[in-house]
Image 1 (cartoon, rainbow, N blue to C red):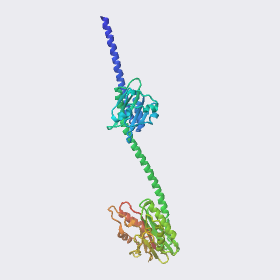
Image 2 (tube, rainbow, N blue to C red):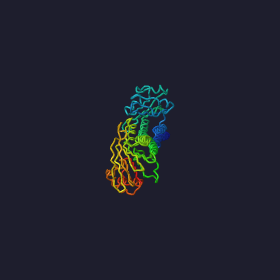
Image 3 (cartoon, rainbow, N blue to C red):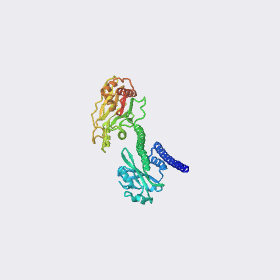
Image 4 (cartoon, helix red, strand yellow):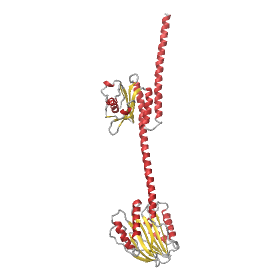
Length: 453
């Protein structure tokens, strides 16, 4: 009797030991799975590249769910086909070339239904498609497929194939479903990262283009300024001439020029091209070249503008230029002037009186073929000054959108007695900018003054 009790006691102890061992194994397995899921969560922050995230997640999951192959298939939003984003295993490279039609195979079924699926006998499952197996020669005995869901929308499936040592279980499905959740987060993060990368690439490209354009505009501005006189006449000349161009942008359409035709005659011109930027600068360069090339001894300003207009208007350009020009005779102080749609010049007499120069109006250069330009004469006495300007002066605006106006210009000219040509221009620009009071310059400015000594 005592022996029976001893035997029963030993059996109970053995059973308890076996039960404890089973519980220990189960707890150990769960701990491994929890550790794997923790690693997966941490790996989401290790990289933002989609492929790298998927690879890290799958490698961690396979340590607790040993399988022969694993793959991640994503839905193409345009075709609803499944394509292999990740395919692990010996035939991974061949598998990645395959696309599954909507609903095709176990993966297609899970993508459409949004529910996980365990298939432990693929050969007898009607939903099984052997197209991948035929392509790769890889035998699929069983597989577990779970959807990758992001914001209630299936974006793909996660699939593991051929579990080592047995069949897939409900616990395996639950583990893989837990793995698929961070994968959905990985997809979202990768998508956002890709958008940021694309935006940064576009920004870098835009910045590079902007820098190249700015560099080219600086070169264009330098070239444009090379068309203008670089030095002013010496103090020994019987006249004092000075001019200035201040473009609203890197290059502009205002222009001026002056040069001696012979020892007794000085040619001068100032104009404004209708456009801005590179097109205006090109038209300005052509106009200045024609003015200098066609001006010769004995030719009047009206004849010059008529000849230049014939050249410019011949090709029907999309821009035109207002202009005023003249020839000054140094020995007599006589001025012969002509204009084409430009602002009214002024003469400031030595006694301080201000007179508008009334020229017969003509069309801007290149506005129409066969336009005729007229000459007008006037004289400068010693101390008298001629002022030419573009509408960037009179139309300069302040913050209240008030214009500088011709009245303010005449008021300013009344304060220039005793100033040299250079001092007059400097003071005029200061007067205009003080009126603008910080408002940005919206138009090019060109000014030219000629005084008889």
